[in-house]
Image 1 (cartoon, one colour):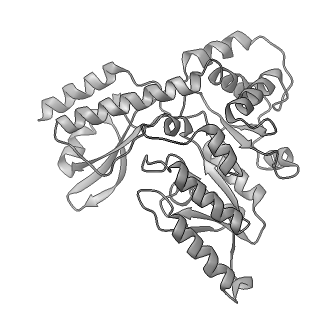
Image 2: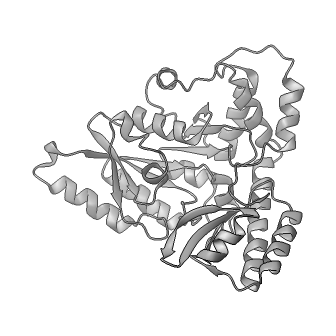
Length: 345
């Protein structure tokens, strides 16, 4: 079946697989202490422009979010997120399971508003009953958001400034970071993100790796004994080389950025082709995720031939579905989609 369901349904980029095969016979130390993990970490430091950064490799996004939040928050603290944020909607209560509440604010096309964030923090600070409440200890953002939108440099700088004013950490979930960096109109760079955030991760699972996320503490500010905390969460991979080799390949010769740009270009062509065929979009996304409003009957017919993601109901008669391109999307995939759609028109 033709698939635009997600950006992690393919395997891995051939350069990543090649390096895994080429290094397979080497005997290497475990738990991320091998030369490939060290090399990948150094390449990420250079790409982020932060030579003092601490870099850790984990296997998946939910694991990463849970671990970072649990390690950085005090037992009485929660994390602020948009109501549409991934940790609030699609992580099965993984954050709450650690004892930390997700404190939600309204979203605008998936994004938190800096003014509302400051209002929330100011109101909490002025509340004489705050000792009986969950303290806000961190702000969580996804970039791109769950709707494929991106924060501008000015928007992220405003949120970062508010976090520093109120003494709380800013964490950016970069599961699709590459696609945000490649988006048309994006004015944030990796060094900007490193400068404005207290911690973020560079997603590999959705951007060319078999699995893996690279956690970056840009100022050498990882919580004490972070690796021990990783182990406590069952997240310390004995064969850490699996992650190091992949990120070393992704950050060699700009591969991570090249394949991200390819996915965004495929999304632009997808969007153009859908518009030419009269399809309506829920919102404007500059990244690899595109959200289309389908009449329910059309959605039921289309899903028998094309794998797509249900997103939400638009109304009683219409459904919002997500088309996602990836590093692996080919022009032939788009051509096959046009044939299917044109048969239905």
